[in-house]
Amino acid sequence: MSKLWGGRFTKSTNELVEEFTASIEFDQQFAMEDIEGSIAHVTMLAECEIITHDEASQLVRGLKIIEEKINNGLADYTVGNEDIHMNIEQMLIDEIGAVGGKLHTGRSRNDQIATDIHLYVNNKTREIIKLVESVQSTFIKQAKSNINVIMPGYTHLQRAQPVLFSHHLLAYFWMLERDKQRLIDSLQRVNWSPLGAGALAGTTFPINRERTAELLGFEMVYPNSLDAVSDRDFVLEFLSIASIMMTHISRLSEELVIWSSQEFNFIELDDSFCTGSSIMPQKKNPDVPELLRGKTGRVHGNLFGLLTVLKGLPLAYNKDMQEDKEGLLDTVKAIDGSLRLLAPMIETMQVKQDNMYNAVDQDYSNATDIADYLVTKGLPFRQAHEIIGKIVLYAIEQKKYLLALTLEEYQSFSNLFEEDIYVVLEPKHVVDARNSTGGTAESQVRKQLEQAEAVLSGNSAS
Image (cartoon, rainbow, N blue to C red):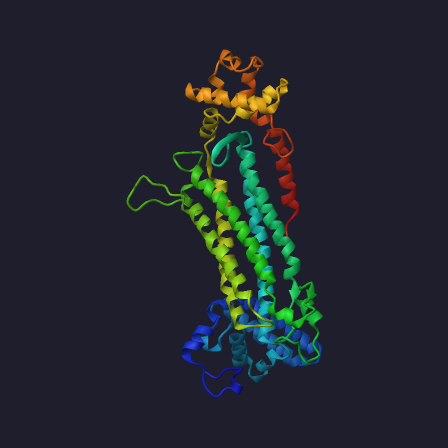
């Protein structure tokens, strides 16, 4: 096949080289962005009288025909044309004739692919923001439905202090809120236009880069042509945010796996999000959260892969940068799929309130409240801490929980104990006593829910 760039060459490309260097297998996913950028480019070329308005009309008409063919699955991509740019240009020439060759006037594939990726990341970032909000909405719904449910709170995966289940869920709401804010903030760096930077040094044609930026919805143009074609910071930033988000999703998934085990039995995931065993008929495996947890590794790997590709590259464009696309596309697929599964899985999970409460009722997680109780009686906290440590040890030896100890047993450790110690030790009292801002008391969780709803209603990306 004759290459569109082949004039300088005397030999055909080695077949293995052609297959190895071609990117059309994956960069065809940028087809819509490539056509959008091309339409803006030829519109500007006509306005600047670099091509005629009639030529621009033919080019735009041809590009829209190709767009329709791609959308209908009728486009014929070839490895011989290497990438999405050359494939579309060849389709255009086949569609409208030699005038299709004017499409590439005043630009390079270097600024063209950079433009495509900017448009793609912008579009996907906004889509992901919407998906994050749908997941956040399910956290709010479940928190409202289980506002009074008490569960063990953990540190080191050891029972620490009782918390409201709603409080626990809302922790993930705020993790995703920070992820969403990072995505929103990143848009101001995504929305730079590299179009018109040429291969690396600009172009001799009297183009109007500000006009193509306006047509494509970019907020500014890159001031430096070298930077414009070689910058992938915005991809790194997207992959970094995605990695943080997947870490949050993975932590939640880990808890869903643990909570749904027979050892915890705090929740049950809907059957539609679980699978069975091919040999053990009793099994109900939490495959979806397990796979969400597993996807995190590949998203992290995509970030480190691109960091490694870029770390030793001189300016400007290098073929190594072709490796920026597959990791980006894979990460978008992983994040998109994860969020789409997470929302209905959280919304449909069954919360086993009694099991959670029984777990709190049969542990020593209210011990801190006894220490606080003695402090209110005038005892220094360190002395109170030591006394409670001895009480817990005694209770364990007696195979009793703290609420089961008699007043006489308490008073054998300190004469400050009175009958009101049993009110202090009740799980609901333990929870509601933590009434500081951001605490797990029901009144604070209700305030937090109001704040979460206000945030969710006001932070959508336009």
